[in-house]
Length: 155
Image (cartoon, rainbow, N blue to C red; front, side, top):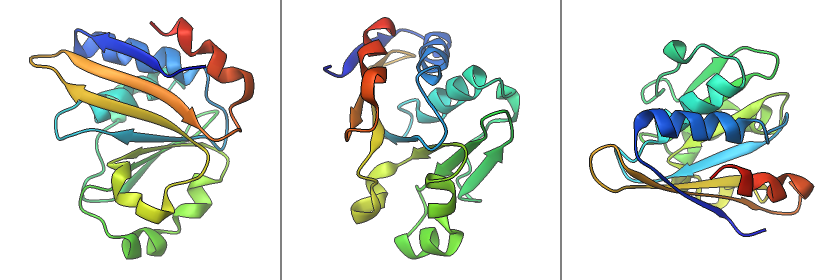
């Protein structure tokens, strides 16, 4: 399956897309988000949270705390690596969360460098002006199985 390519025309559409995407996720999945400042990464994580039955008003970018945990049937571990070094990530014990009982969503995943997991969902976002976003979603690795075939249902 090729990556899904969607143009979102509003914040609401981004939330809805991410909420639908969350139905493909399972415990231990890692969603790596890539995109410039203002590309909509946090909005996408809010949509994932919505799909996991987490109150979206509780979701905010953990820029200064590095990670937020949102408890639910499947917990969501929300990382923001904008201000982080790989040493900080090791100190946080990231592996316990990345490979744990929840879903990890990682903003600024390019900062992972060599720590980028071999198996991960890749979400690339580009700001197209106003509330419009270009979003590509795919899976890297072999672990997604048949779930990638369902990517075409997102658009």
